[in-house]
Picture 1 (spheres, rainbow, N blue to C red):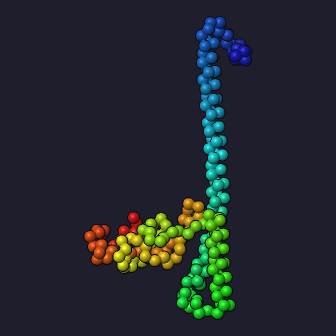
Picture 2 (picture 1 turned 45 degrees about the vertical axis):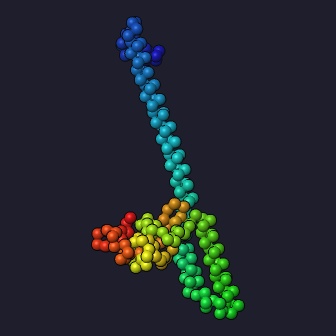
Picture 3 (picture 1 turned 180 degrees about the vertical axis):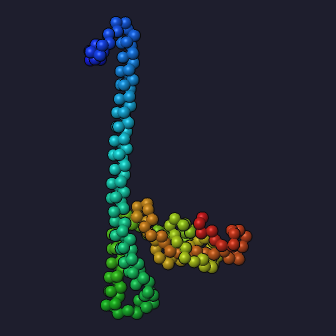
Length: 196
C-alpha cells in the first residue's frame, strides 16, 4: 500500500486523505487476491488432472503393452489347437507309445502357452452355449439351429480372446438361424439379428 502511495506521489497525484481511496485500494487488492487464489486453485486442479491422466496412461500401458505380441502368439495357440483337434480320440488310442508321448508334449506346450498368456491378462472368450454378441464374436455364417434359439452360437471356428477388459481378437462363430420351431419370431427378412 505504501508503494502505491509513493507511485501516486511521484506521478503527481496527491495521496487521498479521506478513507475513500483506501477502500478502493482494498477492494482492488481483495479482487486481485481472489483472482490469484482462483488461478492457484485452477493450476493445482490441472496438475492433479495431469497426474491422474499420466497414472491412467501408465496403467493402460502396463496392461496393454503385450497386445501385439499376444496377438502374434494367438496364431501359435491356434496351430497347437488345430494339431490336437486333427487327431480323433479313436486314432489316438491306436498310437505307439512314442507317438502318444509327442501328443502329450504338444498338449503340455499348449497348456503352458495358454497359462503364460493368462498370466499377462489374455483370456479366452467363453462361448459355450452363449448368444451372439457383436462386441465379442464375429459371425461367419448362419446354420440350422437344430433346436437352439436363433442367435445362439452353434460352433466356434476360431477362439476369441480379450486382454484385460479389451477385445484382442473376436471369436469367429457360426450362429443358429431361425428354423420352423421359431417361425413366430419376427425380424425383417427372417434373419437372425446378429447386431443384438
